[in-house]
Length: 328
Image (cartoon, rainbow, N blue to C red; front, side):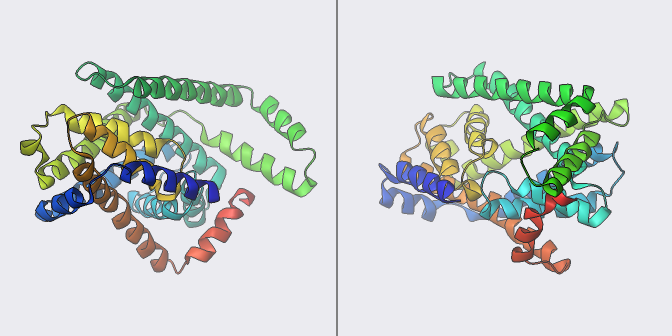
């Protein structure tokens, strides 16, 4: 947690270092906040589409309703606001397991597959964006690193699934130094995890997952574009249609890579940096980043709190349950 907070402070410093506070305030004052309502509607649509896609990924394990998954996604996103390194994903797995009785390891496997699809989709968008915009070298290098990581993780999952008994035996040897009860639970969780790494239930589901992935990213791009309109950036800086795509690809790097809780700092700096490529001044760009981060994160945070309260859970119990999620 301390490392995450330090990372946030470092990137916040970088974002504010040369930003003009007066320009920031003027940009905030000029913004048309009437765009927030359609923007929130688009964000809610994106969350629903993610729930629907997750339903297809979970179908081989068990058919679930979209409502349960929508609540779990909201709670997971809420947990990511104060937990570093995407630990909210474990909370999602725990919540679905608690609601349905499915082993949390099997649920978590579908979340890993979901994230692999997200990163693969991001890399596809980066490749398309390279055709219309000359990204800085560090963005291309980040894409290569992410591609290598996705390929490596995909290969490891395939090998573990194909050689299941060998994977469990290796895990048992690696965990042999731990107390027997802990090692046994960890191996059991891994076995449940491998049970969740399965092909989709029907051939048509592959098309559905691909289509939903494109729609999800379309909602993200539309979020950027709507806020461009709210801040008047399209007319003031003559932003091309590619600006939303480029800003989305660069800013999403802060979300894909495990970092500080709530992506504070990394999100703001990369968003500011991406808008700077199109001539947007640092002050207005940082104001835009703060508003985009707020509307993207905090409505989902309060939505997650709502679902927690509805199920008579608390943040303290959530953290305790997350620590012991491997037991189930």
